Structure formats: C-alpha cells, structure tokens
Length: 336
Image (cartoon, rainbow, N blue to C red):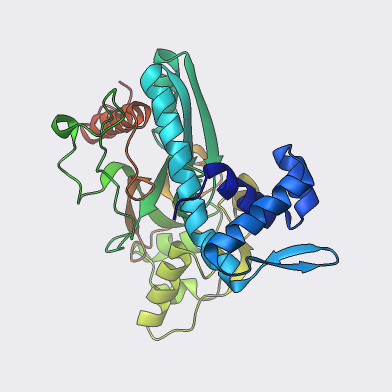
C-alpha cells in the first residue's frame, strides 16, 4: 500500500486544524477535495481516522496511531527535497538549527556567522529552546541539527550525533565519504554548572571567616532559583541533597531558562542558582560562583540530528566549523 505525499499532508492539516474547512483553507484547496482525501485514506487504512462533531473533527485512536507514522514520512520527504536543492546549489539552501540557552553562549554563533559569510545564499532558522523541546523538534523533522548539553553518564537515545552520510549528486549516500565514527557523539564544546549567588551573599562572609570551602549544611537556610523537576540540572541538585539524607532544596523561584531576568532576581536577593560558568563571565559584577564545588557538573555539548537522517553538505559544513572551534578552545586559542 502506497500513500500519496499530498494525501499525507492533507491528513496532517486536518489533525493540526481540527476542522475540514480550516484545513482546506490552509492547503488552498476546496473542502470537498479534503473530505474525499480523508475518505480515501480511511478506506485504505480500513478504519475511521477521525470522529466528526459539531465543532470539527478529532483523530480516533487509529488516527493518532496513523499520525505517528505520517509525521516522520513527511519529514523524510521534506528532507529529501531540501537535500536535492542543496546538491543543486552548494552555497544556498535552508539550515534549521536549535540551541539551548547555554549552548547559544558558546561557539555556535561564531560557527553560524562564519558559514553565512562563506555562503551568501544560505538561510538559517534558529530556535532557542530546552533540550527536550529541541529533541522533539528533531524527531518531528522541524529541525535539522541541534546543539544540546549532555550530562556525565547520560545516555541519549538518538543515533546520529555523528554518522553524517554525504550525498552524491545522485542523491545517494557515498561510501567513501561516510563518517566511520557513527557510535560516538560529535562533541562541539562544553561548560560546567556551578552554584552561584550575589557577591554580597552572606555565604561569602562565612567562607572568609572560616577560610575553608562551604559545606552543604551551610546552604540549607537559603532558597534556590531552579528549573522544573523535569530538567537534568534540577535532578543534579535534588540527587545531591538526597545523597546526604536531606529533603529536596526549597525552590523559591522556578524558571524555564536562566534568563537575564531570572539571574537579575538572584543578583538582588539571597537566592542560590545553578548555572553554566559561561553565564558568570558576562555577569561577573552581579553573580559569583560560591566556594562550594561538590555540585560542580561538567557537561559536553553535542551536535545531534534526526535519527537516520542523511546529512546534507550544509549540515556537514556547520558540523566541521563547530568541531574546528571546539578544537581551538581545547588548544587554548579561542580567539582564532
């Protein structure tokens, strides 16, 4: 059984809009054409895909199951079209890149700027979001690449941190250009999460008085600014408290990202925060790392793509620039 790409697009549009008429408007076709397409798909599947109601349509259980397979098929088709366009014009095309708040502070902007300088016809779609959201966007084919942090011992389910397969002009992967390091992630930088606070925080006075590093008990009277429990950073802090037989820390300010606004609040209070050390470099007058290193957490930044995606020349060009920048920093020459 084969499905036409246009039919799959129509099905997805009806799901997204929840209404036959609105889907038809979005697709710029007549409503009867959309209805016939859905009927054709339901006949091919052998099950109703939508429940009809007075205010629109919603997918049935079979419709949801079908959708799980439709979205990747559409993403693969769109990726093939982009690859074909990229092959025809090596210096033009669209590259969709995702960064987290932390990785956007690293060398990725420099790599993107360098790529744009050398490829005037290139367009970049840049999304800044949480790691989980970026990974979901990759799975759905909404992004080509993302740079996300990986914690020590953290297993990642996606296969393709490396594994770039070059496309020949036939559109097929070339054997001689296949990257052999398919089991290893492409590390393009890193940072370290540290506990930080305002320079006027009372704990700095405790440190000066004792002339020794702080202990976890010293931190207990103070509240925290932390992301939600679903975040890996929050898990690191909670687990450290639990390992000492303590209840989870008191989170006074819960945040989605370490934004300027959130860190400004920390800088004006006695709250503690758990932030990438890169953030402290640009906020040295407002935030300082506490002399409490037990929670210091090094992270790698890894480049990931959609599982089993063939890497286009543009994707590989950005990967190479990210690698080069990471190598320069590792060699102690970040300004080159």
